[in-house]
Length: 277
Length: 217
Image (tube, rainbow over all chains, first blue to last red; front, side):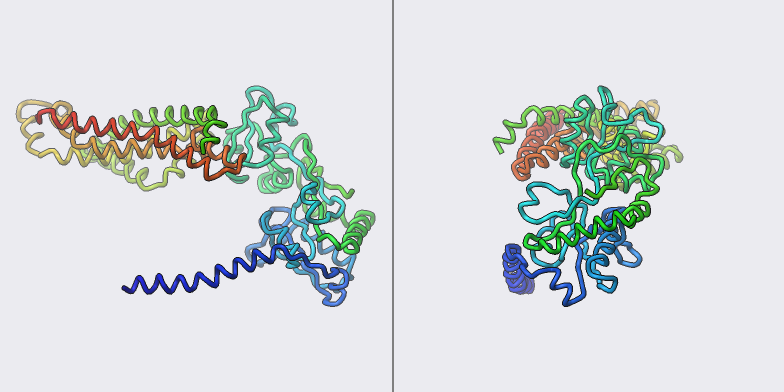
């Protein structure tokens, strides 16, 4: 008897939740049209969408709760360049599934979240010039005979991440190597460490993050696919976009960009990600 | 679901080969290990009893995935050449053997104490009494629970998927992540597991019936 009452009550609680979900889904279609330049000039506040779980790029510090990384620093530098030193900068952690809806809803003004510039995404949003030369690379133990993807021949094993594009790519670039697919980057790295494979492959950004954790492994041979990262802004924000591009150019010219690269990637052996195109 | 089965038949069959291979090895291995450790647990020797109990309690109470991961990630540092298939099969064998040991212990203990005493007083050694008097009776009792363990073992072999062990579940994961037809893929995989486990269930039921007709010693 009591259980039935609880069940009935829970249905009434679920109903508004359901309606709310419907409303939120509807919001996804709404595109913010207000000019970001003007909006920030009024409120003196800008919000960036950044990664919260990506070592070196944007990682939430468990103690302070702040996001730290190369992208966070670069976003800070760009904001100050465009809107002046006094501007208040907010960072909202996003992931690959939430970042586009959050940008389009206006929850964030711009995205700097390890996002590759692709033709498909260009239909949805605008991209700045590339600020990081991302691409697929391989990670090996120091002293390994494998120096580049070309060395992955018959009889070698390469470890990849289940369901990722990089696994499809490596079959193209190293067709004779046996591919072992593990659930995520941490497990793949553990398998590499215990000698289950000769190399591990995924995006160089992730691999750099792993090497910063364990210096006895390094990225070799550079990238063999091109997946440059760009800053994403909504369409109809041409003024904001050109301001970002100018700021990027200026930061590169005055050496601030290189300082940030050195700060985050200076210790990384085999690093070749720095670029402003 | 049919389209998944036809389009990816060769991968699924390849996966089934690994699943069946791993299950067969683990089945035989865990049966042998299980009987040995069951004998340890009920042994009159105190040290054997301790070794047996520790083994059973450790491996019975750790998740299979952890045991298998241990053999995949940690052990290769000491034993080279331990790939996903081998590590997973060893983990599966050891994990299942702990349960089989418990099953056999229960079976042996359910045979009346008088049987052992009678055998010993007729001049049999402890091992002879075990072999000719106790174990044949115990085996009959343990067949139904043993059947459960074997079916569980085949299903548990899906742990290989986490170690890149090329089994049915691993192939299923890859197909699901490349085709994005998640529901259909796992339905097909479930069906193929049924194809492997159902005959095993029936075999165990048949054995159960057949052995129950044998006269009691």
